[in-house]
Image (cartoon, rainbow, N blue to C red; front, side):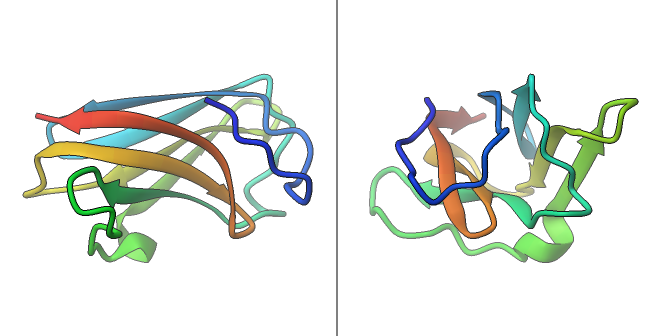
Amino acid sequence: MRLACPKCPPGVGQVSFAASAGQVTATLTGSSLRPDQHAVAVLLIDADTGRPVFLDYGLATGRSTAADGTLSSVTLKVAGLSGPARAYLMVDTYPVAMQTVTVP
């Protein structure tokens, strides 16, 4: 779900989230964002406590680009984590999309 964010950078496109064992991925479609021009990450909030999930986000985050250099996905490694969480796609410290995911 895209979030209302008047100060967010334009060009995010459509965002969907998926969780699998060991990772949460945000996939962007139609994005014009370039990862060399923006700080982009996935932030997880524990669905039960409402608190951020403690991870080494800098080292656990990977970014993929399309052939034209635009952002196509952001993956967060979450080894040892399971259960429901709210996943946020953060762009330049702004939450631009959110979806509840369940890490198996």
